[in-house]
Image 1 (tube, helix red, strand yellow):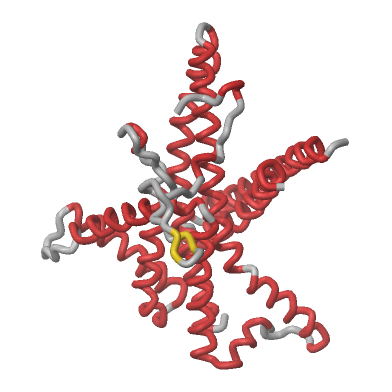
Image 2 (cartoon, rainbow over the protein chains, first blue to last red):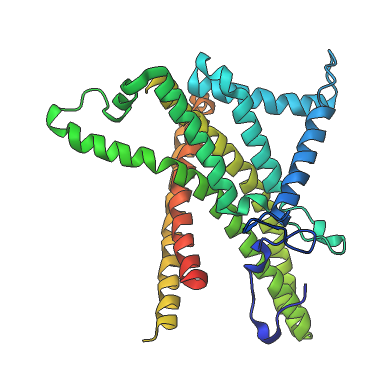
Length: 263
Length: 75
């Protein structure tokens, strides 16, 4: 990855979606090629599968791998029980899959696969197309559960108990808008957190290479501090990857609580 | 002032919004820690709300970032 001529840094090229195996595959006017995004989703899936299968030996005294898997399942199970109550148990498979997929996708995007020649790592969740769909699935489940369980009484969610009758129309509209923004904010939060982190890392990496290209005193002045910053920010990004996955799952649980328990 | 210059100035102004959101995020954690050190027994039960508050404050900072990116790379 050489720096661009003239010193212009392009941090957005890493997010380009292109066919993973060369040529496009156009079917009936639609581009259905197997993209790098799809490839890294398959990598995430295989890694997640390997992790789960390694921990499902069901030993009575669990080894470390099984403890790790059970740590995650217990964590999600506890989070749903705390936020939704006893009615939350049926959502554990969905929220667990959601959390683990986002966690693995975020972390795989940060791993140094670039060392292997020809491999360009790609963060699956750095596109609104992916995170937006995940958020829409969560929102759709909330709506299905809410209307399925309560029918039109679900709309009482938007009128908190105790509002004066005069304010009900205004409060209803405000609460409805705030409810409808939820899938958008859920998807946007994860998408921008990942994109911002990777843009920052790419800009710092460009500084490192520009410093090396200039040579001399610029190596000590530009390259070394930028490299140290990259190490620190990668650690921060690993933390952010985990936190954003947790926040996505936590907010999904909170929205499911709204649908199941209506406050 | 031509459009490209105006976009860059707008992007710089949007970046100020991120600094303000950073104040908000720091506020969330500061208040949580202040309360947790006064009542450590109740701290663990409120950890979920801590992260919900952090997510909400961070979202607004990220919205400012999105505005900046749209001005620089899209519009």
